[in-house]
Length: 307
Image 1 (cartoon, rainbow, N blue to C red):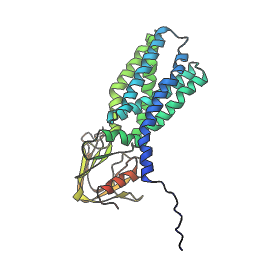
Image 2 (tube, rainbow, N blue to C red):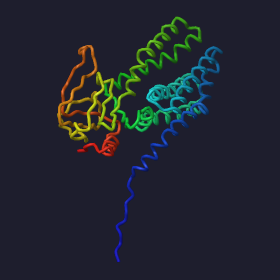
Image 3 (tube, helix red, strand yellow):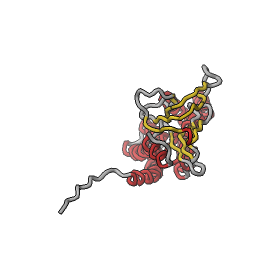
Image 4 (cartoon, helix red, strand yellow):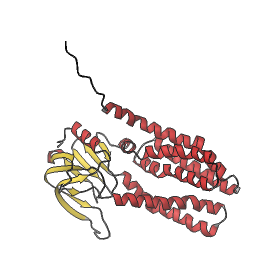
């Protein structure tokens, strides 16, 4: 009589997939909660202000809620940008409400679901869900992590834009035109010039296709890099001492190294110091998928050479 060894439960791919499938509904329900239970904080914040300020606050809040709600209901690459720019505005509104004198309980009812929505929207799984929704045919779009410098610039510019987009219209509503007009102009200018750069960060992917793979990265590269399956010799986690060309930006964290049997060429994005870009030739290069393990699993499923 033999006794089978006990089986230790391990995290499974199906469990992770179930969590990933649930995440869109976490985002949606949290955002609905922002409007359902969080509105009292904004109402309390403007209760003693003029009717114009109250109207501007209400219209602005509902406009932002509607745009993000549409984005999380209809996933796409553009939706990812809208959601990641818009959901943190609810946290900014909570902070503003607290400074405006709203009761702590009301502020909490706004801040808590807003924090859940923001945390869920900025996960790698949400990024994958939204960019994959815009995929063409048989392709896997795997989002890339942001370069450290680009990410820092995006955060700083978002704070400047948020301060302007919220305070400018409110100052005008309060008839403080001397300050309100220039601040509103800053908000408009930031929306026109900075928003497209934020959207570029949502358009950075490692794409697996039947013919091979593609690096679509308008932030780092001047043009799309395409590598055929017959050119690939290995895809795997990069070693710390690798000499592969860095196409990550650079980005922090684990990166994937892709090797080829022959030299492939690409051009780095245009910069003031390199107005025509910088061409390089390489037989191995680094990319930074937001989930390297998922990228390798998908590549393996497509019979690409994993090392």
